[in-house]
Length: 152
Image 1 (cartoon, helix red, strand yellow):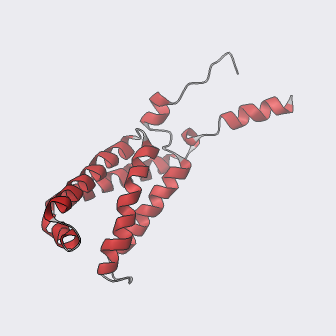
Image 2: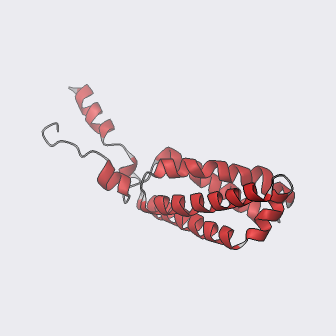
């Protein structure tokens, strides 16, 4: 009988039990990524300068557009909590590129606010990959199967 109660208890442990402040943090992270994607679209000359030395102009334009769209669409998905882990997973290559390619060109020091911001956002993405989307998300409200009342 004790095993049955343990099974019922562990079944109820999921990201829907996360504190509400985690949902707020997830929404702020998604909003930040959307804004960053829009700003990335506005600063095309900087992107071409960074990628221009290593790639031809056409590839740099495609990378610029793809990066912006992944940030915007992924940020919106993170904000509403729809397929959250997939959206977070798509952000990882972009942030790793920012950490390894873009930010070291500006210098690795505490004065480089973009580097610190990239590290914080990467940490938050890893955090939400582990803990899940949370209580107020499309994943929890629609995509998660509801427990059958007959089983409990």
